[in-house]
Length: 500
Image (cartoon, rainbow, N blue to C red; front, side, top):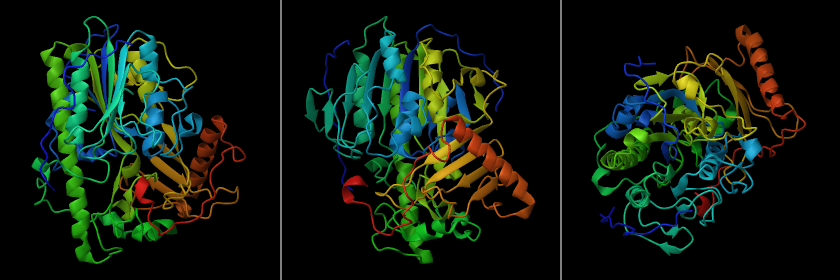
């Protein structure tokens, strides 16, 4: 990989003005705090130091967690980029906001939290990966300043649409270029008016390319396949069928493996190279956070700024023989969420189950802005402060089969504080054709023992199945109304090059 010098994409531009013990007290609530919202793509919590990474050092993210709140059990409700991003903005499940795949626009009529802050007197900006509407890089409503690109963007030399005014291709590494755009916007903010900046990082989404200084950081770290990759006897057959596909450990591994499928033990070297590159991209994200925090402190805005850092969905790195996401297994649905700022305690870890769609009501609550009506997410403000005994103990997951990525069935599942039950509807109303899955997460967090066919757990399985049906029905998703594609089975062909 060649070394590419970073050149600042913008000069001076005038923008248009349109649980651990809580040892420290909560920061004082401020009527209209600023918001710095940073969204990382496909980020596993265990790739961050404060979530327990053994190898990836993230001092700037760890500092935010130490001075604020870390949610230890945070999840997406559809493990796919665009649906989860829409849920983060709107506070809605995918079946409500309608973004069921990576090619659908966020409906323009739907209110979202940045637009609500904008209507409340905030200056708003979105800079970076938007990824709702694959080929549309034009500005979206609700933002004074909007800088994005088409599709996934590239780790080096992405072409950007700058607020619909011009297109430019600054040389350099995506993570730092988008941070430059963010800092340039922040430097133009007038005193006295609150702002909300959303920054969408590409990293660590595939294909994984660290910047040159981090390319070899993890070369000496052994990276085996996880043991669960070879314990599939009690799993649904579709998981074994996926092993040699685009989303399996014996497949191309996002082009880190050139000759595939390859199930030889020595082929783990390709898997290791992929994971090390993934980790390398995370280091740059942490550097970006450090630059932004340093600016806020230098300008006296840090104490009056809510900083939220989160991922849109999790990522499978070999668990159950799979890569990518989409499934309801823990590695696929777990996301990091850390937040600090006015109205929040310091040094606290929260165990309650928090969802991506809770972001919208929580930020509006913290900013004392009018709430979004009839949404499904809930503000975690009281939970973060240790005072919400009525917090959820169960929620449902949804994913619809994609013909463009035919490696995962339709999924409907329920996760409680202790249990997980997963169904795979065929899509035609007939009985499920795939084996279901039942895990006792309290004693089996790695999901190694599928109890769905255990006679001992038959009554519990029936109970959870009924609770799942009730949760779905409460949202109008009765069997006759929960529409989904027909499951056409696991395919071996690679996805089209343009949508990888």
